Amino acid sequence: MDKTLILVKKYEDYLDKVFKIIKENRKKVCYVTFNKTPDFILESAAKYNIQKDKFYFVDGITARIRGFVKIKNSVRIREFDNLAKISEDIKKIVNNDYSLIIFDSLSNILIYPSISDASIAKSLESLFEHLSKINCEVVFVCYENDLRNYSLDKTISSFNKFIKSYELIGL
Image (cartoon, rainbow, N blue to C red; front, side):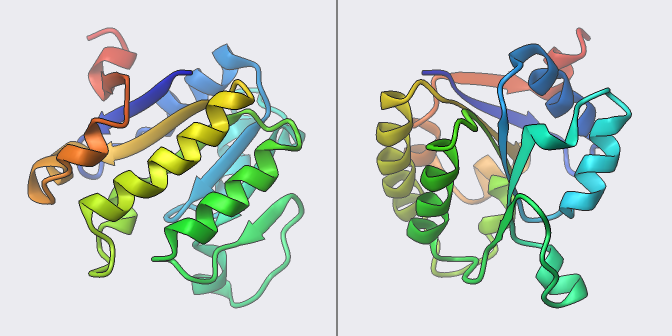
């Protein structure tokens, strides 16, 4: 199972790189988002000829900016620092044939004091164990500086593929 960590620079627009991976992969996508609304992601994906029905969202942003709004093919994150619950939501979605998981972004969960490197690594280990049984692929986005700032040694060891954003565009 590919477990990819894409390292991006702060404030870099990386969605084009994520959509390139989605297009090449051709699988249905479980998109975990903490910083872009599903509507925005779907509008952006349409520019790459990626169909709406290819996505199911674990949404951690819409309720914060618009209150409770039901969005088709989405589940709302209620507790942002509850990694076990987020993992359970992901597992339910992938069991419905959404076998490419995009997690946007690891950096967004680092702001919660209750989340540590050890807790992230433990959650990823459990999630990845489940996902490997059903042949899923995982792509996490993380700001490059956050790897150093939060000392994520245990978390980093969970991944088997690392891509710096400029490698995705051939620079």
